[in-house]
Amino acid sequence: MNRGMLLALSSYLLWGILPIYWKTLTDLPALETTAHRIVWSTLFVAIILLARRRWNWLHDIARRPRIAITFVGTAALILVNWLIYIIAINTGHIVESSLGYYMNPLVNVMLAVLFLQERPRFWQWAAIGIAAAGVTYLTISYGRLPWIALGLAFSFAFYGLLKKTARLGALEGLFIETLILSIPMAGYLIWREASGVGVFGHASATTTVVLLLAGIVTATPLWLFSAGAREVSLTVLGLLQYIAPTIQFILGIALYHEPFAATQMIGFSVIWTALAVFTFEGMAERRRLALAPAPPH
Image 1 (cartoon, rainbow, N blue to C red):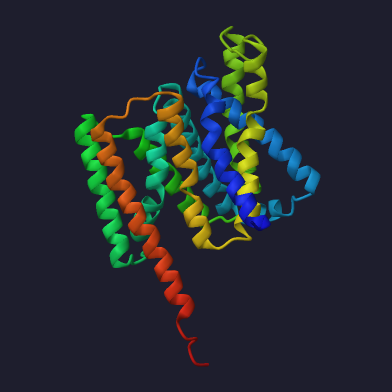
Image 2: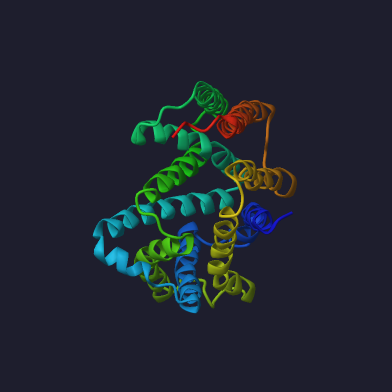
């Protein structure tokens, strides 16, 4: 296994098991956990950037205010995504959260059609249609929209769409986003402490340590992914991306014993079928392009 593959694989494995980490904070309000995650991530990433002396990108942002405006949008989306994710863990919906990340590649294609005028190929349309059928079935069987899955999938897909217009390194982008959010989130945490309901330093030592390490836990897999993605093919990344939601799915059922009825299994199976169609179509298309003769000069 080469270095890039090992780094990318490590990032997805960490993302997969993170529910175990956040599950230790289920007694906290989801917003308080998310606020700590944001504040400590800002500090941790700032330390990394200082150590690596990587600040030249700030000049680009200063010269192009539109980038800063774009990052206000990505910051809002990452706040929504992280908050829904913590709510899912707090309320025993890890299985449904895994569904959101399974759906994300298909939602990416939909947004590319709507906003980037891309033209999906036939089997990509087929995969989207199959996934829509699966979501419809789950909605009927739940008696409600699977809002956690849809919220995670669409917030992260829109996040990726905006990031295309303001490209920065993964750590630099995370620093800007969390810095934007850290001001109101720090204010919220100070208000919680002043009101006597904050838990930092007042709950168990374990809870305080878990909150302190939230920045490291958030940034480390992103750092590993950023380093590994540059060294492996899109085909490999396309296959690896399903590792994290698969681990989450297994954790939800096997470790936390979340209910998973036969009707849910049918809905998930339909969406897994859509992902199989999408993945193998993408692999076949990349193989076809690789074998195509080069155009004459």
